[in-house]
Structures are given as C-alpha cells and as structure tokens.
Image 1 (cartoon, rainbow, N blue to C red):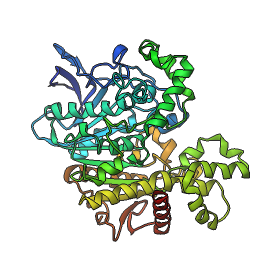
Image 2: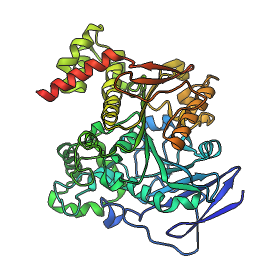
Image 3: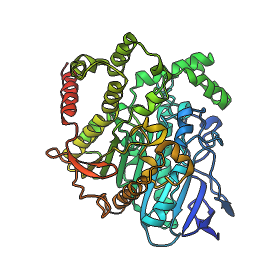
Length: 498
C-alpha cells in the first residue's frame, strides 16, 4: 500500500492505496463544533501546515447505544462532539473528473456514522469509476435542538445544525474533490432513512443550491419535517431535565456532552430532526418543490416493501399488546387520517400487527415518496421509482423486506460478515446486489439508472407510474398498490379541504 498525498484547500492529506482504490479517512471539513460553537452553524476549518494523516476514521457524532443500530451494523464506539469528518474513496487522485457520490447516513437523526463497514466505497470506486464520499454530521440535541423561539439571535438555526453540517461537507466537496479525481459539477447525494430525509431537505435549502446535481432518496422524504412548535417542545423537555431556564441558555455550552446526551433520553422519538425554521429551511418542502426549487435535479427514489417490520421487530410492545391497546396504536399513529383510512383498513379484516406494519409502511414511506415524485414530475424533473421486495432469509425470514435491507445491496457490501444478520445468506443475494449496485452507478454517471443488468426501466410518470421491483427476479410494474395509493390520496386531500 503506497501513500497518496493530496493538497486540499486547507492543507495536504495523506491517504493510502488499497488495491485499485485510494482511500482517505477522517478528513475534517469544518471547525470542531465545541464549546461556544455548540448549537451554532459549522464554522470554516483552519488550515494546517505539513501533511495530515488521513488513514483512520474520525470520531462519529455523539450518540447513545441503540440495539437496532447494532443489528444494522452502524453503531460506532468512537464518538465525540468533534465529529465533522468525511472519507473519500477514488480510483485515483488524477485529472479524470469522475462522477461523485456523497452518502448521508441514516439513524433517526440520533445514531450512525459515515464510517460503518456497510458504507465501504471500494466497490463503487473500483467497479463504477466514481469518487465516493461519506460524512458525519451532528446528531440528536447537538444537531437538532431548536432554540430559536427562546433566542432567535444566537440560535436562529440551531434546530438544523446537522443539516448545515451536510451543506458544509458539500461545500468542501465542491472546493476540493477535483484533487481526488472527482468532478465537482457532477455530484449525486444519496441517503437512506434519516439520510433520505436529509437529501429531501437539501433539495429545498437555499444554502445547498448548486452543490449537487442529482439525488437518490432511499426510504425517506422531507414530508415529515418538524414545525417550530413541536421542535420547541423537545427543547423545553431538555431544559426542564437540566433545570435550565430559557433566559440562561448559555449554560448549555459548558455542560458535559455525556450529560446532554443522558438528559435527551426523555425527548420523544423523532422529535429531534430537521425543522422548518424559516431561515435554513424557509418554507414547507412541498411548497418549495412545487415552485420548482429543485426542478433541475434528477431523482431516483424508492422504499422497501415491508419498511415498518424492522421497528415492530425491535419493539417489545408487540409481544403483549391487547385489542384495546391495538386500536389506540392505530388511532395515534394515523392521527387525523384515521377516520377516513379506518374504513378501508377494517374492510381488510381485523386490526393486527401485520396490518399495522403495512399501514405505517405506506403512510410514512411509500405515499410520501410517491407524492414527492408527483411534485417533481409536474416541474418536468426526471424521476425513477423503485421498490425493494427481496425478503431477507435471516432469522427464518421474520424481517421480510424491512427498512434498511436494501443498503448492503446498493453498496454491494453483502460480503461483510456482519451483514448476514440482516440479509441472510441466500446465494441469490449476490446477483441482486450487483444489479442494484450497477443501477446506482449508472445513475451517478448519467442521471438515469438503466443498465444492462436490469430490465428496461422507464422513468416515472403520472400515467403509467412505472416502478422497478427489485427481487430475485426484477420486474417493472405500473402503479403497484394503486388502490392503496388512491385511498391515501383521497384521505389527504380531504384533510387539506377541512
């Protein structure tokens, strides 16, 4: 392995050559967000003299241990507030100007990192002739604590620090990636779950405009961004736990990170995430997209068939829930949609866990993906839709085609030993991984996922709604689950009228 030294805008970094790919790990892209910079937008990095070693991953963002993330293979142990680092894989630091793929990891905006073995960019670089970048960004209270309603001068964008970190990473790519063999004018951002919500949010952020050209959203969209009221309540819970008044927010800057992390445990799940703050995210994403803000960005978007199965599998509630509690779960999960949707759900039979999983999959993931696609298509944007139907053989098949299952197929990282916990060990998964991997590479190169490895894949439109179903045998199906789509469409339109 030979050392590969590259000059960035801030100084030289030394990576290493691993076979046919050069790798640089732990490159800082912004100043450490610590002390007085906690809850502030990322600040510009200071330059350094000499050559900085870039041969090991930098620390991941502060986060608590989560069983589900351990199972998914993305549970870093090296964590720190000083976490704004990225990693680069490239066929070579030359002048070829290859397409660039920037990955934004998921984890409910609470967990994860850009250094998981799932996101090893070697295959993309070697087989796809692309440059891959994975990033860390601030998570939980460090990245998404909305304090603007309490101090709008200093903390105006504190609720979106994690997203602003992502923008800073994209600016670093724009300024430096050419030295690593990449083309700053051909950047595809892609992410899964919270990473896909991030991608959807970046599509609507003025500060991210012009920093990428294409986008892939895997199981996530910007339809569930927080409003300031919900986000402020989460901040109030934290302040109450720490016994800090709204007039003494500066105390938050000196509290040990571990104490903040512990205090945040009382904040409800998914109450920390991107906020429509009127500044970094000026308006509802749907409105921004409807006005054509991202009409020039080609989109590849999709979901898995059984997204919600992952969450019920790790929720002990489902082992002991009774009938009355089950009705309340449906009501609370659907909220104002329940009166309209329930008529159709009850027609399918009694309420049960399987029906709940199907309902939540469609409501949280599938319908929002379709809705975003419809908006983009009306702006003249090319869109390709997929659904991942492959059933995991792990744990006797109980996971089905759950949330996150497509990740090792997209990255072609199914050869990693830890991924068998998720995917199982069926031999046909290798063929599917190659097919999906090649489709993502094709999209990075051309803005179109068609490749010889998959059937002809028409773009998504409002007439045929062609959708690629990835499975042991791939196929194109027009408007899958059309009845369910119409039910959700009618229900949501009635809510808007009322």
